[in-house]
Each structure stands twice: as C-alpha cells, then as structure tokens.
Image (cartoon, rainbow, N blue to C red; front, side, top):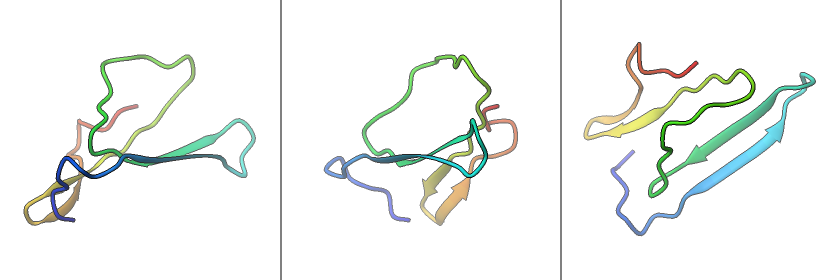
Length: 65
C-alpha cells in the first residue's frame, strides 16, 4: 500500500459477528488517531501499517490486547 496523502478519507465499519456479544471493527484511518484510552470490555487490536516496501502487520509487542 502506498502512503496516503492528507486528502484520503477515513473509512470505518462496525458489525456484529456470528458469536453473541462479539463486535468486529475494521477501518482505514489516514487522518484520525486514537489517544490513550480504555474499554469497559476486552478488546483485541491488530494494526496493518504502510511502509515503503508495502503493508506490514505491527511488530510483536505492539498489538493491543
């Protein structure tokens, strides 16, 4: 993925999974960034970040649980 310029729009999707109580969130965020925050429930996050060589999954230790 090429590094997006500032004119790219943020896009996000939220939907229920087939497992009761589980929601799924997917987004391509170019301008939005999250400040440190907490959730009232468990969350698991995996980020895919753009690099000059293409997309890469965040290195071990940087995945949020």
